[in-house]
Image 1 (cartoon, rainbow, N blue to C red):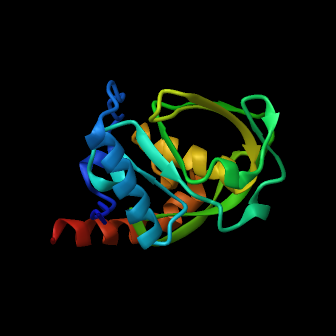
Image 2 (image 1 turned 120 degrees about the horizontal axis):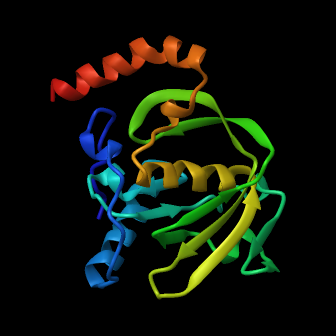
Image 3 (image 1 turned 45 degrees about the vertical axis):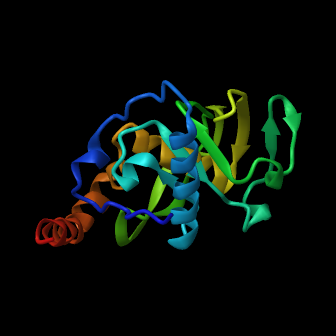
Amino acid sequence: MIREIVQYGDPVLRQRCRPVTEVDAALVELAADMLETMHDANGVGLAAPQIGIDLRLAVIDVSHDPECISYLIVNGQHAELGSIMPLIFINPELEFGQEKEFGLEGCLSIQGIRSDVRRPAEVRATLPQLDGSVLVVETDGLLARALQHEIDHLNGVLFVDRLPAAAKVSMKNRLRKLLENQESR
């Protein structure tokens, strides 16, 4: 089922989400709904707060572009991107590489705004799965960026919060208009 994606200004987007404590049929169904919603919106990731749910659950699918990464190590072994896509995870932990790079980001909850965001180029993510297993993923490129972006959502952080000061100033009016549109609904 396709869910409504909440938009900039909704308070759930600014909350640190609750950990998932139990995986049941309802959570599995929610994850499936999130994947369907993300694909319907042409996104590469979606976090539970983006559909108004305060849980540490997110989905990512970058399989449309297998060249979006230069390497992928899963549980210590080299892997193909398609072997872990779509990625559904709960209660993630993230470690960052030292090198940083700029990349263009947008967000399904901040319609019509895209900007370059500086983030670590590589990550190591510990991603508990719905079946109780755990994936430890080391990667770069779009997958690393998507992991950081979605995990930020679980911590109440939006990509616009990560912009340099000058970019935040230039974006202020556009964000204010989004807030006004949200409040008038």
